[in-house]
Length: 103
Image 1 (cartoon, one colour):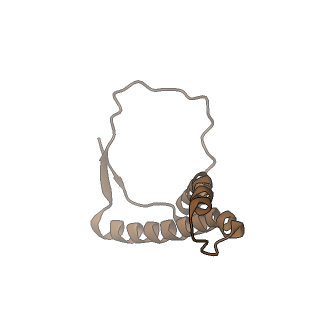
Image 2: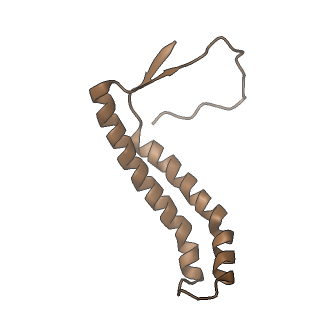
């Protein structure tokens, strides 16, 4: 069965990906500290900048995702969106999780 992805919720998608980018920045933070400690030249980036870096990743991820979603929504209106195939013949799994509230 073919479905079309005709629109992304800009705010919700940007919020989720902004948080994911922030988390990725936190994951890479120790590697940044190690690279800075092993660098023979100190470039002036201190611990404060390293701690702000994940937040900047999150903000940039939010903004770029919002722009990307807006562009996708515009183009999808013109050409119809991405077509995907969903297989509904497989077994249905009950996760026990409640569905997210609609906003």
